[in-house]
Image (cartoon, rainbow, N blue to C red):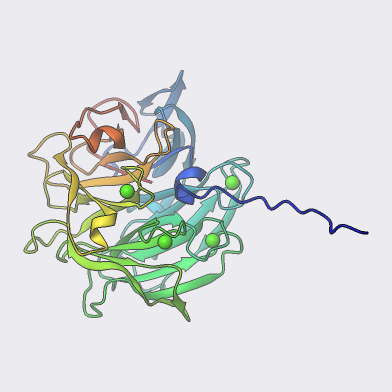
Amino acid sequence: MRHPALSILILEDRANPVVLSQTTGMAVGEDTFTNRNAIYTDTTGIRTRTGDPTLAGPSASMFKSDGTFEQSFALGSEFSGGVRVARADFNNDGKDDLLVGNGPGVPARVRVYDGNTRALLIALRPFEESFTGGVFVSAGDLNGDLRADLVITPDEGGGPRVRAFSGATFAPFLDFLGIEDPNFRGGARTAVGDITGDSFPDLIVAAGFGGGPRIAGWDASLRTGTALTRHAFPDFYAFEQTLRNGVYVAAGDVNADGIAEVMVGAGPGGAPRVRIFNGRELQVNRQSTLSDFFVGDLANRGGIRVAAKDIDGDFQADLVTGDAPPAGVTVITYAGKNLGLGNTVSIKSFEAFGTGSFADGVFVG
Ligand SMILES: [Ca+2]
Ligand SMILES: [Ca+2]
Ligand SMILES: [Ca+2]
Ligand SMILES: [Ca+2]
C-alpha cells in the first residue's frame, strides 16, 4: 500500500513581537540644528563633530544596539524641520532599513533607505502638499504578511490621522482617525506592538501636541476597509489629563508575558518623564505602571522621545530615550528587565551627533 507523503510544517516562533525580532539597533534623527555645518569623524564608533560644511544639514544615523555608529544619511532641505525615524527590515533582506519623516516647515515627506545598499527605496508624500506640520513615523507589521509596514501620522496642525503603507509594496492600506476626536489638530504619534496577545502586532496611537495625553490601542487583526475597527484596550491618559503636551509613544514586551507594554515619554513642554504601562492590565482598563521615572535633568521642558528595542538580546523589550531640545543629543538605553524591577540604571548613554554642547535634540526609533 502507498503511504501518504509526510510533510513537515515549519511554524515560525512568534512568541516575541515581529518588530523586535527584526531590528538589531536603533535609528536616530537630528531635530533642530544649532550647528548646521557639520561633519562627523567616525573612529572606533566615536563620532566627533567639526565645522566642515560638506555634511551640512539634517541627517539621520543608524547605530548598533551598543551605541556603535553604523551609517549616516544626509537628507537635505526637505528635512530642515527635523528628522523623525524608525528602523525595520522593509525589503526582507535581513538588514534593517531606515524610515524617515520630516518635521514642520515644508510639505510632508517620507523616505525609506536600504540599510544594506544605502539606495533610496521609496519617497512618499503621505499628506496634502498644503500640509506643512511635519510627520511622525513608526514601523511594524500591521497587515499580517510578516513584513514591517510604514505608519505615518501628521504632527502639529494635522488631525489624528493614521496612514499605513505596506513595507512589501509601499501601497497604502490604512487611513483612519487613530484618536477618535475629528476636531483635534495636534496630530498623533504611533507605535506597533502586540497588545492583544495573538502574536500579531497592533497599533498604538498617542495624541500630539496640544492634546491631552490620550492613548488609543487598535487590534490590527480586525480591519474594515482602510480603518482598524476594534480597540485593543480602552483609551486612557498616560499623564495628568489636564496636560496639553501630547505623548511620545513606543511599544514592546518588557516583562516577557507575550503582551507588549505601552511606553510613553512626555511631549514638548513637559518634564522628561517616562512611564511604562503593563499591556495586559490595559486590556482590563487598569493603568498599572511597571516603571515611572525622569530621564536626565528634571528642569528640561522639551519632553523625552522613546523607542522600544531589544538592546541586550534577551528578547525582552528595552527602552531607548532621545533628548528633546534644548536638552542635547544624548541617547540612553535601559534594560527592560531592570526597569520592571524599579532599577533605572542605564545600559549605555551616548551623544548621537557629536560630543559637545549641542542643543539640537534627537528622535529615536
Ligand atoms: Ca532591508
Ligand atoms: Ca506587513
Ligand atoms: Ca495582536
Ligand atoms: Ca508584557
